[in-house]
Length: 263
Image (spheres, rainbow, N blue to C red):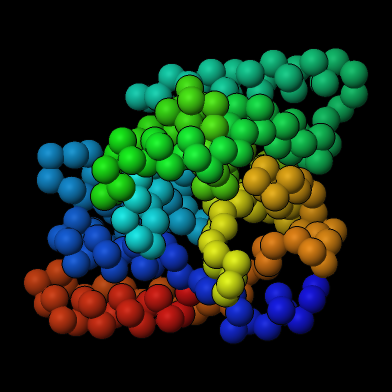
């Protein structure tokens, strides 16, 4: 890749940790555990939800920005449009399965095409929906972007991640004989002078990494990414340190700043 992307100091990680710092300051953050590795968004009067980040569950979670904007809720129990999207995916895969055994690439391409159909890239529409949410971590269902027929990278990545997560849970992707179905993650970073971006990373049963990025119009192996593409590689990161007790505000903020530096 070009030098501007190879230089790690041009890539900014830790956007989820920055969101955690914001919530901690506001008193809406709950410490991570095994079920919610990035912590929880716990605002009084609203349902407590795990924060979606690298290698976390997607369904039943909420996706927040490093700055205040909409809080995108992914929950197929309350959002029927997610169920509908998954049903549409299965119908499409069923048609393909009649022709030949489905390879991982074929399944991911079907996810990719469906996401572009359900949430075509439309920054203006995404901004208008965010304005309705008051831009202050107001909760917005992911299905709102399906219904409005538009969104940006984070909305497309969340839908793709949700669909692949469902395929994994239903054992419709991966190697059934080996009982290995892969793992999915919504990844993000920022590149200096370019801004932030989100996409989906799927690691199959053979440890091959695939990238699904409707916004950048790429679906394929990480190894095949072109020189002009986004920086999808993960920078090395240390194990997250446990947060101190919430009543020690100064030590909490200090720990979170260190955490951001490690991501």
